[in-house]
Length: 567
Image (cartoon, one colour):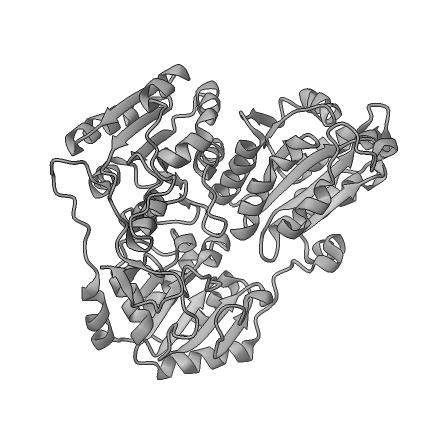
């Protein structure tokens, strides 16, 4: 049948099961928004305060639900405002489809008002970027974009429509294709062409080689990486760890891939990794990393990383193998599929001596009451009071590390954080997306005063949509992580990191129609959080901390993983 080109865009979204999109309108995308008005009962649009907030919201929605997020923006500055969000999704393998519109064909390349080559800009930070110049291509490109974003190693895709393609009098031939038919092996192969996003089938011989390596190991260590979370392979990973009876170190992006309070958990690994995890990495004789790309925050010094061990890497993306750390063996495939095959033939192992060497090194956090509120006290209150299935979205910095270290995450999508790109300003947008995708769960936004200044305008989105998001601001009056480096490495030369300025975060919350609390003691934090949890609207809790609080432990960049600057 023949339908409007813009109608085909909406129908293709419905094909993919999309019922929520995030965005901000503008001139070139008006035709799409005009069509969206007709579909407002089927597709819920969330209007954010800024395009970057919309990008992070779509990303948070994708990470927390396992679905593909969708984001709309107009041309020029609207499109370029998405780029930080696109890069954030790209570095953390989050499936988001970004839809933008550009100037008309007759203006293309003429520096027209709000014209920019967004497909060229986005190409290095997406799995694919499409410029649609022919309306007849809309269904194929839309289906291809979702297939590429969701399959293989997930990631962002951008589609840029020329404005004349979306003209109101433009009609095309369209046939509805149900989502499940779009997900058959043949259709994915046909849709994705040369992008090859389908998950490779693991080599059974590679599986058997790893089984033999496990049988010979006396001091095995597992690393739970972000691929376990993205692949929703947490159950298979837990079975694998328990059968191996091996300690488990968790990367920042692996939070939720293995229970944080499991008896085998050694905590985070890397620059701010626990003593147990880092020393285990140095002493193990077999290291099996699942869905971990060995970034410079994990393998700080590749030459000395796990130097006594045979290193095995399991990853869906062949490009990650041997990129940062040279391995002794690797298996290409999705975490879930590889672990399923491994578990089928894996006997029960026991490593009591090795566990007795490593697991006692785990040290519980101290949250004793004192004159000054501490990060541990704040997080201890949150840990005790928040629902067990609550979702936590963070920004980037000291608060991010504290939240990763002191809170326990039980399932994929429970911790939302920018690990690869380290995006300040990610948290509140991600929390909005998570709350829209999980209306029955409480969402916590944990942030620092520096990060919160970068995204606090999205409080208007929280208020308008009546989202009960609790923003907890770790307010130490400084760019804490940068100050920590300046203290330890730069001779206490605090160049431009002191934030001795407004706003008053309590008054800011009230200006947006939300409740605000300022807390200076653990008792005040307990009362404020109890009131926040009882509220059905958004709340901001401003936690006043000492300026010189530090994240411990810490290993300097480029150093061996056991060379702790701070213990």
